[in-house]
Image 1 (cartoon, rainbow, N blue to C red):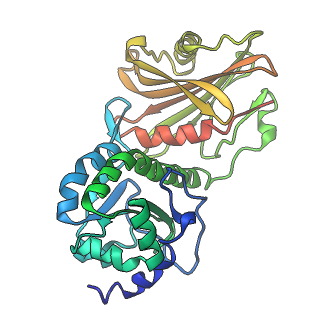
Image 2: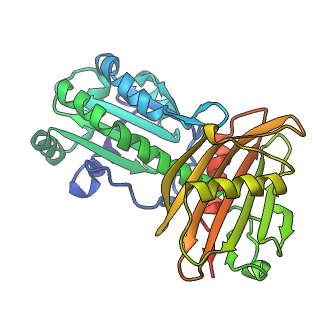
Length: 349
């Protein structure tokens, strides 16, 4: 196996060294760069393959899996990722996959740890001995559109503790890349020109594979739909109203969403009991986010939704950007992520 990895062992030492490569504090790597000399990565974007020796994996798996496979509720519990243990002896089959993570420490003579030890230059090993632990994040290491994370410790105890502490940051690294990939896919299409939104005091980067669903200038809302065979129906609706003082709150967002969904989506309904509320940011904006299930008794159907409400002080207007998904055949989370990516591009005039 070592002969097969000779080239990799030459590449990794150049990358796993120096303070600029470390992300111990959870820093997210810079934007992905394309190396045209490398192939495109393989595999599904939701699969993460882990390489770790049996003793390490025995204790590292649970906290790592609990973080990476965390649930997001749509109409059911859904996970963004699935963590899979990979066989080190099949590394030559896996090294080009999209999402990889390696765990090892300096005191082990087992295969994965030895591979990592041999991949570290002397200065990196000395640095690791001083810091006790280290996390290194590499994008496009062996293939384009790839993220590889190396989690290292001086000994097993240090590694396992670090794994528990960094599990959330590990998830965030993979999540960020997932969103970047989704954004690349969404904006593989042309977008509507800014002039398309001349009747409204806002504009949005709307891909042209979304078509106008309803356009009600007098009622101050514009709605788009993306409908494709064997894909979710996805809706983006933007509503605004004049508001002298900032009264955007959970109650305003809820009441506005109830009223808007009944009209725009032909009597869709939501309940307060099944709706979650949280504060998020859109750039510099403080936003009220609602999410949960919707149902429609008229057509006996249902799905998932999320709404983003905010106030624009300069124009004295309140906005609600609503996302709705109808897809009884499958998971809704990827569609909600796409809709959020589009919704975050809104700009008010």
